[in-house]
Amino acid sequence: MRILVRIILFSSISLTVFIVNANNRTAMLTDTCVACHGENGNSLGPAIPSLGGMSRNYLLGAMLAFKYEESDQLNAAIESDQDLEDVEAFTRNSTIMARIAKGYTDDEIKIIADHFSAQELFVGQQEVSLTKAKSGKKLHEKYCANCHEEGGTSSEGDTGVLAGQWRPYFLWTMTDYLEGSREMPKKMKVKLEKMMKVSGIESLDLLANYYVSVIP
Ligand code: HEC
Ligand code: HEC
Image (tube, rainbow, N blue to C red):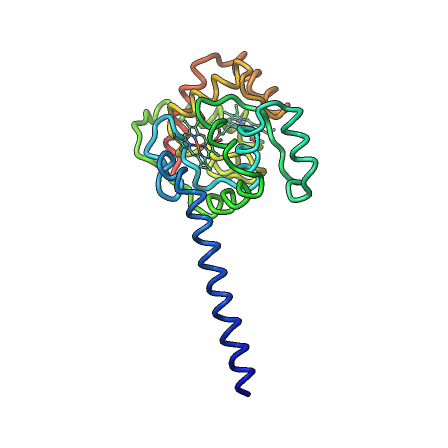
């Protein structure tokens, strides 16, 4: 009996130690991120994106794309790891994230992605023109809503989150896509190019107003 109690006691202590260690490790890995992306990934903007509400696979894809930069290396890293089977990553340029992401092993990046994907979507306060938002909504529904579901609040399909994101970050990202310095899914490219042809550059401003106005 006494032995049994000891075993139970011992195993519950070691479990506690394990959980505390895991939490410390996560905090150690994510402390750096919080300095820029804010507590729980809720950045104070405007050029640093908020991470709350994004899916684990999206975050993994983004971090690995920053880390490996070239598509050959990026694809090789993903293909060699069974855990990353469902991750689709697209190369992208960055000002600072490539340097930061290179400081982590792929396994550490998984812990980081677990942490931020558990955080809630955050919507910062931004000015909005409701007239423009209304036109933006129509564009969104026609060209983007198939994949960016629920007004861009959802990261279903590992798309990242558009609603509530900081406007300068959104516009800058769209410019990267149009200039080709960030790779995107083929079907998104088709839709985006069609929208630009039909509605022109101001469609980005209309969409930006719409995404700022969406509150889940
Ligand atoms: C010095 C500020 C800074 C730090 C520290 C930082 N970031 Fe970033 N992060 C940025 C900026 C700026 C961008 C936009 C891309 C760029 O220019 O590098 C970004 C972009 C991202 C994105 C892409 C978001 C999207 O919408 O696709 C992810 C994911 C990300 N960071 C995760 C992290 C994680 C995880 C950490 C910690 C390991 C971290 N960042 C640390 C500034 C920072
Ligand atoms: C066929 C599906 C599809 C369509 C249509 C689509 N997207 Fe995307 N979009 C994606 C996926 C998948 C990603 C994630 C790419 C990655 O992992 O880098 C994405 C990423 C993005 C991002 C980057 C988010 C971030 O946090 O950095 C923006 C911005 C974006 N899309 C805007 C749009 C807009 C605006 C439209 C409509 C004009 C659109 N997309 C249409 C699938 C789509």
